[in-house]
Amino acid sequence: MGSSARKSSLSVLGLATAVALLVAAPLALAVDRTEYKAQVEPICKQNAETSASILKGVKGQVQQGKLVPAGGRFVRASGALGKAVTQIAAVEQPPEDTAKLDKWIGYLKEEKSFLQKIGQALKAENKGKASQYAVKLNQSNRRANNTVISFGFNHCRIDSSKFL
Image 1 (tube, helix red, strand yellow):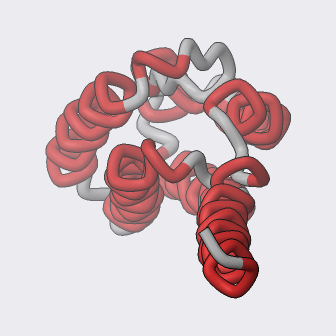
Image 2 (cartoon, rainbow, N blue to C red):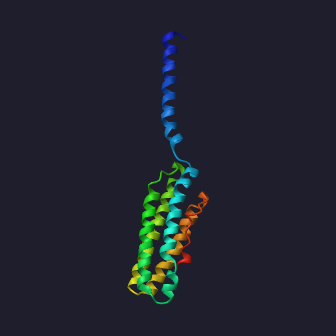
Image 3 (tube, rainbow, N blue to C red):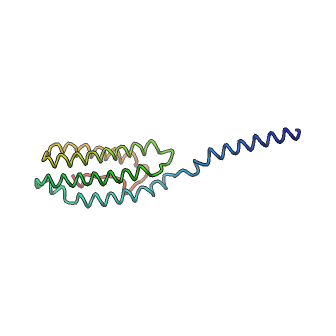
């Protein structure tokens, strides 16, 4: 093989290596599931604590017919969840889990909406409508939890039954 053929082969090999590195570099820098969980769990923990504080005793308020103040608390909890969902959505996702996590975030947004609707129904003293939304909220909780069960979340698992 002549000198120019060798140089040409080395140039092609060098180009192929550079392309391979350019393709692999973003994959190497992408977060994995463990890193994602480590970033999201504190957000979920903060939201769980905030929601527990806001909704503590709300079940009793509803049972005692204090619907308007209970409704206000559900609206506040909706706002807290909305803030958490915005923070979670901003966390870089593992590329292989993007579809699953986008679906999960969609369920979280749905849950925020149901909390808001429960609050509005209670403020309008419509306990029956609030109960309908509560059923839908619980269904959405199960779908959200099932979507990300493989992540092994602790604080990102949602159980609204303790408040409803």
